[in-house]
Image (cartoon, rainbow, N blue to C red; front, side, top):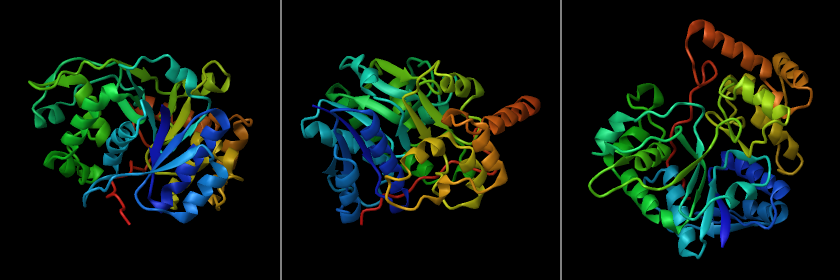
Length: 345
């Protein structure tokens, strides 16, 4: 059996899960979306029945107090294996699918791990993390990884169990609980550990899993601020020269009421695609409207092509980076979201 799966139980962010489910319903056929749940939410369950008939709530085993939301990912994947699923594709609940994912998955054998690429960074070993876990560099990947999209089979169960073990350490909890401005280690929670396990080894671990990276930009649009989705990819995708599978909203979410995110929302490709589902989410979505003059200009300048929303601010931001020699991954004044303790009630 095959399925997609996801999880989101923070009420303020369930809109993201709705958009993911609706986009799968629009683009995919003959699929199951397993939605991990901790407790029953009658309102959301009712919405799934009405709007996402391929979605199936799956109750997760109890989590211990203090668990982080990132620990749900390997736990849910392992739980689905125990239910008889033999191929499971994790999709983050801040991701919108842009076309049928079946052709992407059909090319894979059971041994290969499919995972999205993180931006367009060149791969580099994260030495502080390697040293903290007592590992040794073993092999390089074609890029850094992002776990927003990850396909696994039971052949990857040892990797997932090792991931859970490495997340259940004082080092992981210390780094996850440290505000980004105070971090001295390049840290991206569970995907830092996944990348570690795919590229480094020890006396009891050999990273021999075949890895297929879905390229950033042309495969999965990794959107953070206005410059991370490059001009080249915007133009090529908008002209149909590439056909990306999904758009992933990194950093502060557009439904966050923080006024600092207003200009980012207006120039967001994620928001442009989210607007296609405005009438199906069954809740107010004022953040989808351009409320500033610059936002309205950005929408008009896109000529109705979602990939080109924000192309002007992107060009200006890239020019600034070239002039200053500084490549900031986020829009001015914005930082990626920090970790949240899992809500269990």
